[in-house]
Image 1 (cartoon, rainbow, N blue to C red):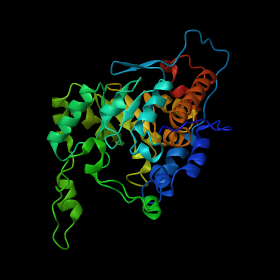
Image 2 (cartoon, one colour; image 1 turned 90 degrees about the vertical axis):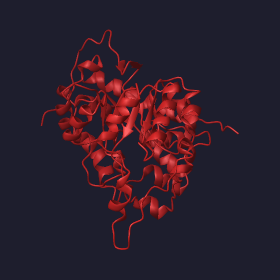
Image 3 (cartoon, one colour; image 1 turned 45 degrees about the vertical axis):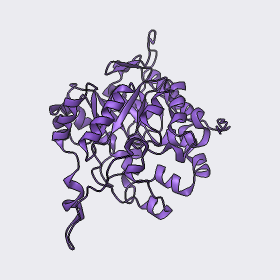
Length: 364
């Protein structure tokens, strides 16, 4: 039975949803959504990187004809904020990703659907009224991966976002302490039927990591292979080093997502925002660069674009909105961020996205 949802009184900023979500989610679900690797230092740094940057205001500008519309890979977006790929939306709402995609459509925002969604990519696409991209993990079974790609193409997804920064699972102590147990890979809606008995057994005293798991993880040659089997644009998500950005372009990537996986993979890697400038310099405008990690205000969106991002993705904030108010919560999170972003544009003298550059950052 579908629940009725209302936005609670007093919710005026994205962070308000996190406080309320903690009260509504189980301890296991909240740990899964909010937690990160090890001591969660990178999660903190993601926020601190935005807080360190100051904005430079301008006055008495002419904003006639201004706006936030952009085009990415042939698709039009009303503003440069997309929903990042996140798993297991049913932990927040019984309608799972259906609720999320309805909320995204209500806010006219693009959504990236996770391979590890609780519903199939086809079920999510059916009610969609907004551009969808599909986040892809390249599986050990390349034939299965190719079939996932064909399914995404047939369902109308506009791009593939390939996560490349998590070939192995890192310890997430908050999840462990809360007792969260993720489903097996073969139990996810999009990967049912995938054989998981592919990891070689290590002899006593040998490393299971280097004698098993890493034997079947994706490599650069798999990106070139993926380029050969799909017509969709390919973005690589999880690029933090300029050398990897160069390799990505050389192997056929159409876009880069600077991301540290929300601090969920390797703790003490830098904030995504801190990694942006070197990656943007290396890419030099050849492909769009997006970013995620730590965005909680519209001013954060402006800062990311000032450092060279074409658009940003948000993850945890909309999951909290989903937990509190379902589709309305998702749409409201996006509405808050968009409004704050537009205010920040005006107050820094930016009429269009093209006018957002390093000059909006106060020089130190």
